[in-house]
Image 1 (cartoon, helix red, strand yellow):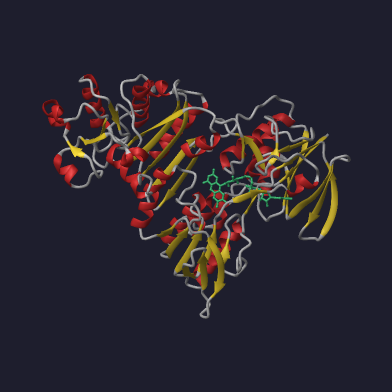
Image 2 (cartoon, protein in one colour; image 1 turned 90 degrees about the horizontal axis):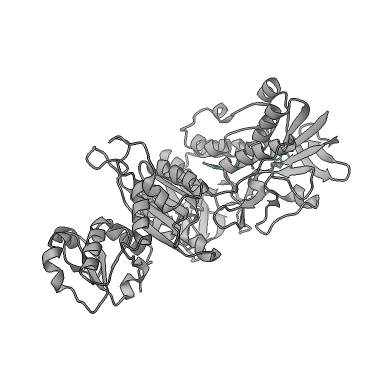
Length: 553
Ligand SMILES: Cc1cc2nc3c(=O)[nH]c(=O)nc-3n(C[C@H](O)[C@H](O)[C@H](O)COP(=O)(O)OP(=O)(O)OC[C@H]3O[C@@H](n4cnc5c(N)ncnc54)[C@H](O)[C@@H]3O)c2cc1C
């Protein structure tokens, strides 16, 4: 009988094992897991720390017994695979509880060892009370630490999605939370101006946020607290520290066995998730895959891709011809009532790649019809290729309805939709859920108007230094409450009578609150013969840029 060994029994490994059984009843499947659990919900760990998930057993999606009884899959927990003999098609295994080493043979081997949280080699980084979050025992220890020591203050190092989920859950437990981020923005996977909504929200909810200041050292104070010192010399005291500064693909086994690794530090695989050895497959956080937008190799440590890759590897082992499509890095994260999500490429990423011309539009629609009570704004950014409008990426931040829009856009992106397709998307609508023109439609319309030449866009980054004549078309009371320095107020409601006040010899840049009224103004002025551009997303987008200091000349 064919013998398939799987190293790692969580997202990628467990889904590979279960899928393989469904497509091949006639093989032996053994899963080796060095930890105490298989198939546990790592994504749920922050919520166990926050006591949203109160019972540890709820984190266990499946047990070794269930794998055995339901799928005839043997799971060996506390068993670490420490070597691969590719010539003999055998692995070296250590039974960690019995302290016994042995060999096992395979016809097919799947590596799903995941990734390791990065622990920086800084002074004091190994002190008690400094945690990473990867396993159930990690979260159990953090919970116990908070409870037994009555912790009041926490420092979270790293403001990516795991860091922010920890911020939320520590705050939920009543701790004072400080978040330290080496990059110049929180949620570095978003573009900077989009991250400014997140940063403002964190501050408004009492989180102390410090960016552009990498942590330099940890120490213990005389009264037993932890002291975190940054490169600038700033210091924070805390009762516990969470390190959430990213993960590194676990490639030790693969490297030792001479499997090809890629430039991004992951195991190289083909579209069937097969490594450079035809008898070995690899999936999940440990591998490099192709980014669907840029076609470049990337690592995407996310549960969705790990699960899908597990299925692809299983199908391939079973003799089918599957092809993993690549990753879009579709991510969602919630923190203290705010949701942020993205799919595809950010502008930041596209700038580094340099592979195509693109444009971005901004919008701030309500998550449902404005007339139905409780509409909350969604701040959206849509990035697309010029001139054909191919969707390249989307980002959204808001309190409600964010993930639904990004999910729609994610599927559109995977199917290579254009902004013209988004204009036509038929999405479900009733007042309490959306709008007859859903934010996805509106994003498509704004972008399509641009590509059809109905309107030209200006860039907020260039506004402070431009020679253009800046016009704020909002009503005087809105202008009075705050406006872009140097802007003249000519409200849209008076533009048809007042346009003669505008200079003919200069380009006119118009803005309003969110970009809609200024679009009307731009259409009117263009038809009157003015050289006019619209500033995308209006004053709301301006404030997002200004907060990040991105509009300084
Ligand atoms: C706190 C946290 C929150 C997250 N939240 C989200 C989220 O909301 N959304 C999302 O998409 N992703 C999230 N992720 C990421 C997601 O959990 C991972 O991308 C996914 O689990 C990767 O699956 P994997 O199978 O590659 O690795 P893992 O799930 O990490 O499993 C690898 C397993 O292999 C075992 N192993 C390693 N080496 C060996 C060996 N030599 N022998 C035997 N066993 C070995 C390890 O013990 C480990 O249990 C989160 C991750 C964490 C840590």
